[in-house]
Amino acid sequence: MSEIKHNAPVTATAQDHVLHKTVVMVGMMGAGKTAVGRALAARLGVPFLDSDAEIESAANMTIPEIFERDGEPFFRQKESQVIGRLLSEERGILSTGGGAFLSPENRRMISQQGASLWLRADLEVLWNRVRHKDTRPLLRTANPHATLRALYEARVPVYAEADLIAESDGETSIETMVDRVVAALLTRPDVLERK
Image 1 (cartoon, rainbow, N blue to C red):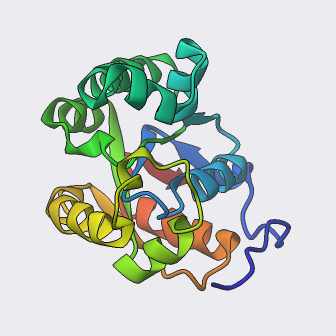
Image 2 (image 1 turned 60 degrees about the vertical axis):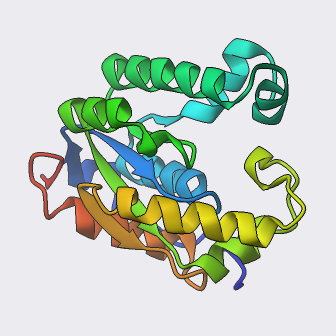
């Protein structure tokens, strides 16, 4: 994986665009939803929101701790509540956990109040990004690569329902990824427009 360039020059400024709807970043763990979402929000001059961070803050626990103590169904219920609240509070860029978009209720909320953007990455890109981290409760299995593959195969058809797609290839800098996302968003003037 190439080195991520956090301080690359910005090619557009917040004054160049108007965001009309919250953009909800969806995709697999390791796709870059948080890193790209944070840089996109900075580029557009809008708030960056992270549903997992909001859940952890409200629970005063990490996601793995919530999974261990309360189980995945409880976590998914809280996740839906947080996404609904964030969509209704302010317009910005919202990064969600990898499983959030699987819920039909979440997809309905996102479609009604925002626009979903899938950061599409292939399995090996994702594996290279997550294999050395122990913060992914769903990958705490005897064979995490096989688990990731099964999750990937099950989730990709659902992610394909997203409003927009941007390719995350594992070689592209964050700033270039933001360029790709902005280009995708500009195809939907109801979501993002140039001034």
